Amino acid sequence: MKTENIPSNRARHPALDGFDRKILGALVADAGQSYAQLGAQVGLSAPAVHERVKRLRAAGHIRGTHANISPEAAGKPLLAFVHVDTVGWGKSAALMAMARHPEIEEIHSVAGDTCMLLKVRTAGSDALEHLLAQLYALDEVTATRSYIALTSYLERPVQAEVTEDWPKPYG
Image (cartoon, rainbow, N blue to C red; front, side, top):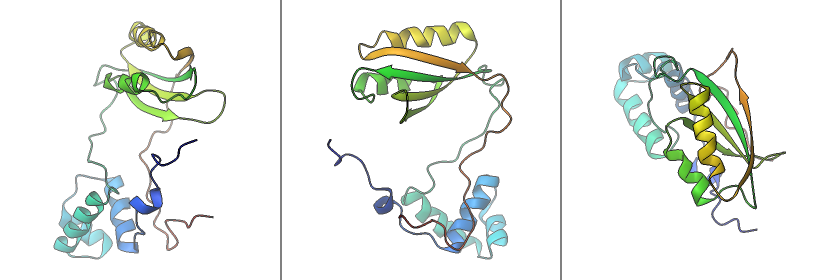
């Protein structure tokens, strides 16, 4: 199996210090706050926080700033998780091209009884059925299993742990 295309998280994400971790944690809680507000929370000046945020963005630690809108406001109240079984390796160009559909929020290669896992939000069951038909039109897709969420009790972004040993060493 070729592994040269699999990026090393360690090389892309150098170790962060305590201030970086505090900044990340504060941004997860409220990404819209000013650098002055961030600085007051973490114990740095606004210009120092600004420079650190620029460095964190450049290093890929901050991937973007997003508004967390309600699915109902977006007209997509139906949340489903779709297991996709494929012939061979799950990640194909055709399957990855499905990312062009805004209903597909996440695509994951997974271990277990399926190849790929999709997180999908649609306007309703008809829209989900239409999306599934497009998946089945792909030659490599052999089966899907859809799990519709009835109620979501917890959804949150990645949390930055503010501890002295974070990120945890490998091994």
